[in-house]
Length: 162
Image (cartoon, rainbow, N blue to C red; front, top):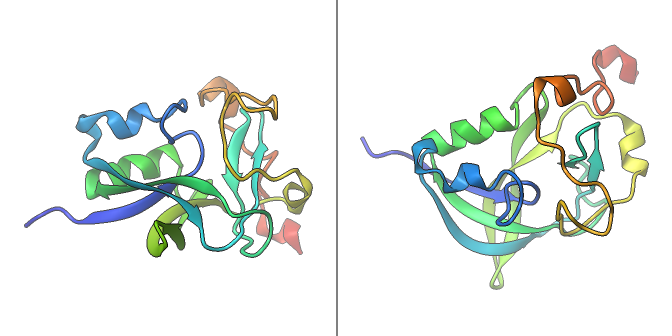
């Protein structure tokens, strides 16, 4: 049976020239083919947060900015590897969004921060992430010592949100 392929939109550290792009380049993780550059059809807030200066897309459609990124076609193996990086279900959720490229909308998976603290919506938003950008908040690679606890960006108990 042939492997399934999926469109994935990356807007942060997975973009070309960014700290985690090596994961998409590494064939041992699975297939990843750059299809096109694109911009989100809807606006979303992308903020830089946590002790590691991670760019997060908040699942608040219509707020923030249209976000610039890259569209990749990936196989199941690569999608699983990306889910591990993004700590799917624990930190981020993979959701479908529309991304416009060359005048047409392409449905893509994109990772959003789940159960985020409302204060994050007050942070400055960006539309085109670069770890060395003018924001002055370079990404610190994820490690157990620095970024294992995301309580500074997430609500740990959903009852806290009531």
